[in-house]
Amino acid sequence: MDEDIATRIDRLVDEEHRLHERATSGVPSTDDDRHRLQEIEVQLDQCWDLLRQRRARRQAGQDPGDAAARPPEVVEGYQQ
Image 1 (cartoon, one colour):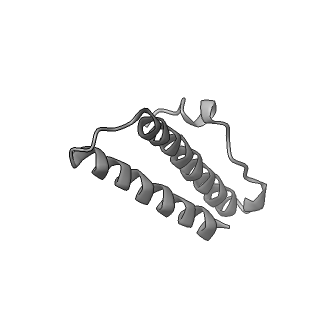
Image 2 (cartoon, rainbow, N blue to C red; image 1 turned 120 degrees about the vertical axis):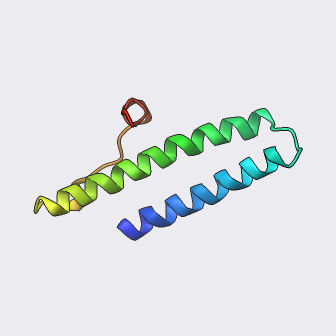
C-alpha cells in the first residue's frame, strides 16, 4: 500500500511539473490548468498525510491499514 501511495505521489508530481513547465514556456495557463494545479496540490497533501499516518501507525505497533485519507479541508488546514 505504501508503494501505491508513493507511486501516486510520483505521478502527481510529474503532472504538476508538466503544467508548470508549460506555463513557463510561454504558453498561457488556462483556467483548467490552474484548477488542475490546485487539485494536484490538495491530492499531494492528502497522499503525504496518508503515508505519514501509515508510517506512524506501523511505528506504534498498530495496523497501518486502519489509516484513512483525510478530507481536503483537514489536510489543507495543517501548518507546514
